[in-house]
Image 1: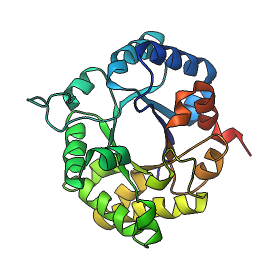
Image 2: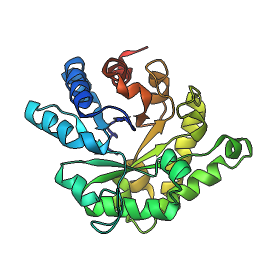
Image 3: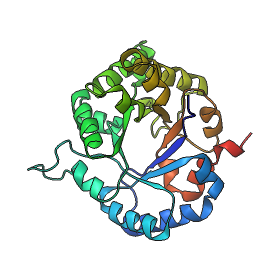
Length: 259
């Protein structure tokens, strides 16, 4: 099988106005080397108000960073005040869209069915979804982590073909480790990412499970990135707070140079 290229994604969440975004992208481009870009695909996911500015900088300066978004609606247009459609993002040359992030699920009540509709719509617009899954601390301590994550994968990707699933990105993010400073051990992260891959294999077969890239997300830092990325079923990282600092984010991207 072909080796899965690692994907390190920076989810800026609700941070950086468009002036700050331009500066952050430019600084990141200065501190990353051609070797970094050869070894790792890098994506950044700014707030909606920054996307056009970031697109312009990336394209005008020829920066080899993939442009992403944090969220979208599943309809291509309509009376959905405050929402953004997949088609609007595609017109801005967005390539990756985060779907079903735990904060969207926990704070805004997104369901597995809605995640499925969004993932399907993102694909239909020619982009790739990063479909998130993960368990709460209560679910983990109750022995329900594998069941929860497997259900999220099966329901979130329902109706997709094996070749579509093979090209997706899935992100396992333990909810209890997001923004808390807590991190799953590399062994815990590997166990759950292996569970995600097994769920894909059980429904869509070996080709899909071998092709799909699985990220770990949850307080990823330069200090823990190397050990996380050494795990066989972890193909990248979905980075939150640490991606706001270009120097810190670059050290995560350069995980392979540590140890």
